Amino acid sequence: MIETKIKGEYIQLNQFLKKENIVMSGGEAKMLIASGTVFVNDVEAFEIRKKLRNGDRVRIEDVGEYLIQAEE
Image 1: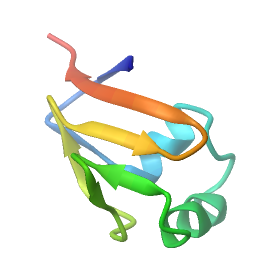
Image 2: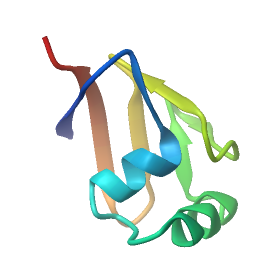
Image 3: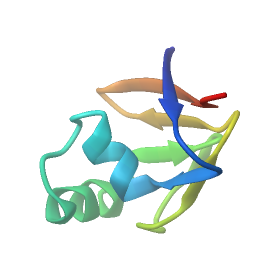
Image 4: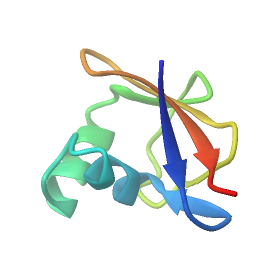
């Protein structure tokens, strides 16, 4: 599992995917989320702007698993 730091209270799922260089654009993020391969806390994610908060886990099939951690 890869730990990733965020600034602030949350990061949106599409922004997270770009931040981690999983996708290069918002359009790619939208397509990846729509493909049904993105899970947040073991629940399939379809909300493009889903808020990810400290402690959330994001799993992307064939990519990896990430743990969201807030910077202090």
